[in-house]
Length: 528
Image (cartoon, rainbow, N blue to C red; front, side):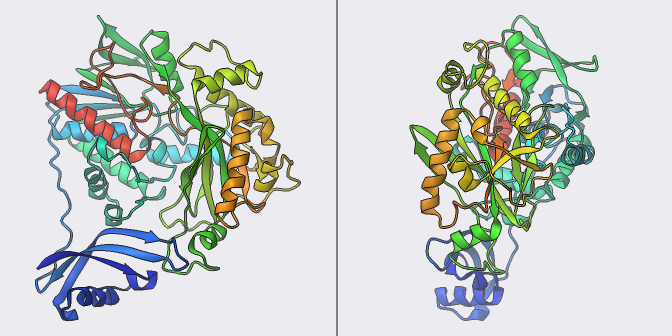
């Protein structure tokens, strides 16, 4: 007999297979020898009480032989001689998963990636961290795998209506991810492991006959009679195809500008901007697990919060337990920070973005009150320019070389320039500076109040052991590229398929991957 059984165990018990079998036998009133094996279906942590618990849902084999979990299988076709081809601009999760889905349908994908492969990209990131020099085409946002490759690899999403989350996770496992991502409540691959998985995906695409071209920055679209025919790249090459999937990510400002210049419809989209806050991981562990020392059987603790301050949403974003703050700028003279964690999440710090929602009316008000200097408030690029302006102020405040302006957390709430700053994981370094001079007034005020409020909810959170680093600004795209709800094509340009986070239809690795698959599946039906 096979049966799914739920257990609530202490962390040490959940890590002991013999004890788990004992509790399974007790739950079913059978002998322990009757339990031949089990595998985990779901796993989560309940830390609401002083004693944390592990909730397990276990597929159990009782009085019959145990069989390992049967994962999904995939049939990738040879598309070398395919009569249909689709250009995919961008090799992030939306582009990669779109390519794999096209290959399953017998269509040849041609991926044009402005950046470099994961190995060459790593060298550019080292130069950015150590020497303060950014390569505009190869950085934390641009390159093989997109922004997620070197900025954490969290796979949690609430976007279940957008596609098959299980299929996406199984594809990651197929290409080398650990099976635990299939059952954890908040699955995470880790920046140290994701590049190998991305490389395996590329190999599959190329082995099947797909084209994967690096350092191919798209600089123009070939359009006839409002129909997309192909693209031109910076090196002078032209690529033609039956359809074009635009999956460039949330930081491809030049693509947004190209669309606007060519009078292709785009829209300003609300996004969020704020700071990244870093605490000692031990402090977050103590607060969340209600203990002095976390112990060996619990993972580094995280936190998540959302609240309203003065009518604005304030929320945590991309929380990284055991993580590192990284410079995520894509151009010289602009300072952006993000966070990531290795698979073990074993660094001594915990960091999270804490951000405030920004709408067009907020940007216009900031301009009118001289908080920012921007032109053309009617432009669909208004929020993009708002974003860029704040990043430039942060860069100047840090003094260059991507040194970031920062304050201790309590000092931030009290408008004090910190006399000293704590140790921090941000490699380019920190410069003590009043972030009131960097952030637009409404964002600074909302953050101050939010930190005070949350400090009352989480013991020890509001402390000068924590440091506030500016600026966390690439939370999502500040531009939406519209598309028809049924055909998923741009309403103005036939055979142009805006896709993923950069087009405004996803927010993270899994949702972007699902959107890429969704677009590719629809194209397959259209072409076949």
